[in-house]
Image (tube, rainbow, N blue to C red; front, side, top):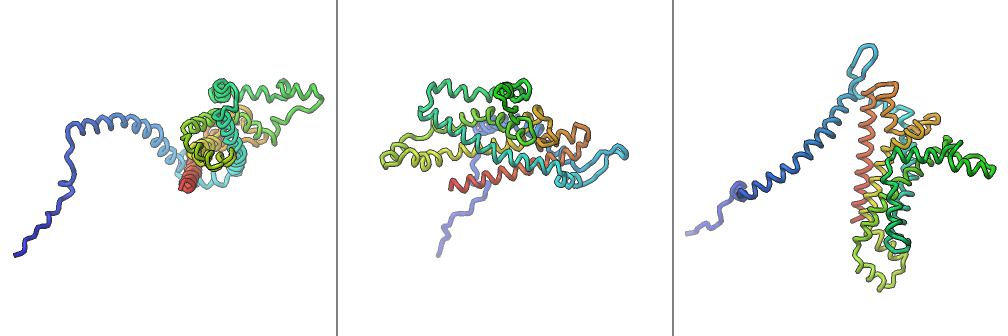
Length: 309
């Protein structure tokens, strides 16, 4: 006679361990601590996004009131010459300014970490201090320095018999603002990279030195790969900040001369509050900018993941 000795199948309810009272209290405390963040996140991010999406589907006219227009605001935004020129302008700003900022931040961080820079504590503080200056104050200060009449640079060139520098010209304004942004944020990125350098294991450098690697080889094959996460973080922050640039452009130029410095965010501001008062179109522009940022950030994360592998 055969006897079936196979164990009886257990259900999911039987396999799941029962939570003790202490575990339940622990989970409850964890949910209670996280709940305020989710409430604020939903109230300050999700709800405004949903409301912006709702506004983008309607248009307010002087005659006829508010009417449903569907995706017409998105079509108008994507075909607006001023929006397209703003996207191209911020693309140039991003491609030129971000590599310069990351390269200078990496250079200063390496100089501090290697001890090549004298008075390391004072130098680190001096490089970081511009980040603590409010953006409005920094822009006004550099606006005075750039001034074609009373600015120090203009006075020096006038004393030398030369024309004033083209800081406020149509071709030079974008690069003048790049200088302000770099001055403000190089120290912030330098601190991130410098902190990462301080946490690198020194035994790897000792092994590279014993293998006969020179300074350039060590930097290229050891330091840079280990710094890749920090450099990627700085790049993502810089790219996002460049695409959303507003303060420096608006305070210094208000979009001039001849709309040559209108940014994407400034265009949204102008459409919503300056003259047009078209909240639906401004909401559509905002959602388009958000979608572009998501695409750029996802592409950066995917590229970083591939390089790490």
